[in-house]
Length: 324
Ligand code: 5GP
Ligand code: MN
Image (tube, rainbow, N blue to C red; front, side, top):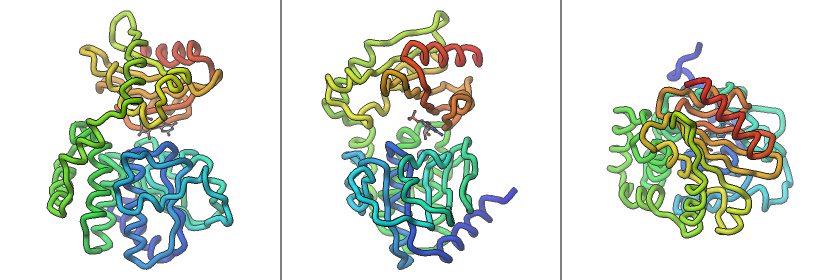
């Protein structure tokens, strides 16, 4: 087994030896996915490399303050003129997570930088730390190995990834090292309170409205250890909410005292449902999600299942009850 320290050196060599990169994070990118894409782009710029940053869809509006955010191509709005053989994937537990961006990728060299315990080690070079709080934490280490001079924009990127993936420095992944990194990033001029407010506190009106509807669908198991809510396409249309507006809803059922697992079921169409799961600690929801073809972390995981809302709800809730 290669150590993390060795993988950092190997990843550095990978980047030095190649050029003309495609940088991609997972579909429906969250704060860590966007900031990790941008931090890799920032590093490649510093090294004088050429690169293209891309995602399957748009970057959430509330993350566009980061330097370079407007340079991330929205694949759904871009005509493809070529493919790439040097690829850096960030925050993707498996290769499928890049989504349709795979159409831009040809056989070649791929660096897989990630912090999900369910990462299947795809790619020709891996840089994986399963207990890192965020992929941004790994990128902090990588930038340290490169010995580049830090600036405020890159500090803001890394802080954003760590802030969002730790739920505001609250999750168990918030190690002493995370706090040391955050301290350094704040010294570089990051405005912590402003970012916490805009990324973790503020709700758009559609987000508030869809939250209200979702909460009214609450159901609980007889022993009150499992609680779940759902969102339908009708809810989305009625409120004008987009996918990014659903982030955080799953915490509400999980936060009910005594609940071990909270779930949000998002109906995608008549025959597909996305399940987001959050655990209070007893249940490994990454294992449950992996069993359904998804993945994630022990306390936060997701998967997509075929079936109606009723069918998928039954399947997932029964599986969770079994593991309690
Ligand atoms: P969320 O429930 O917020 O979408 O995701 C929670 C965690 O599970 C995140 O770390 C996310 O990357 C992971 N995750 C969510 N959906 C999937 C999926 O379909 N496949 C995999 N491998 N991971 C997922
Ligand atoms: Mn992440």
